[in-house]
Length: 188
Image (tube, rainbow, N blue to C red; front, top):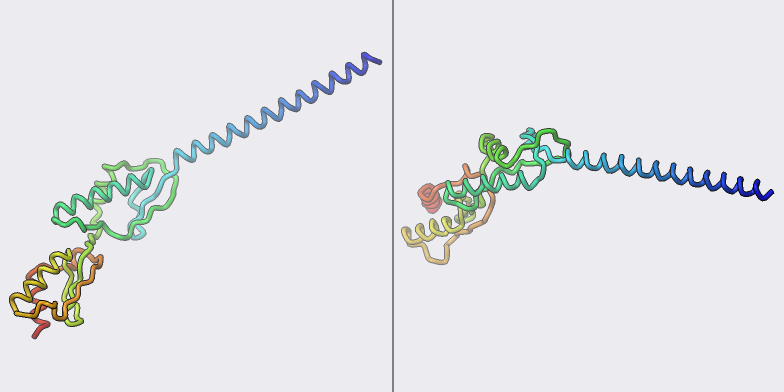
């Protein structure tokens, strides 16, 4: 009987060992599958960039796209001699799987050639409650007001002038002479 008990114990031990090995193999297999899926997803995830609903392309990380936008804005700021130039306002980054993401240089090229609207953090000048126009900076707006006051002997308390900072299309801004003429026309 002693041999029968030993044999039965040995069979049960082998059976437990076999189940333990099987569960270990299943667990390791599942972990390898999950890790593989995670690596594949991490490698293929990025963003599709849209401008007013039109797809411009794909980018691996949002920072690559933002760097390209900053680069163009800085270049435009130097060209216009104004640090307040902004590139469009209709961008949307949507998470997507990608096969061929664009790099920084490719994005600079795409954004430069797209004809995206330019904005400026400008200053709207109002005179006696009426909007005269928008200048590209508050310093320039103050200069126009001071010039008008000195030319037309308006008291120095800014008689009826109001300046409001606002982001507007660059094409909607006016130059110094045009604003001065507009104020003069409203004064009459």
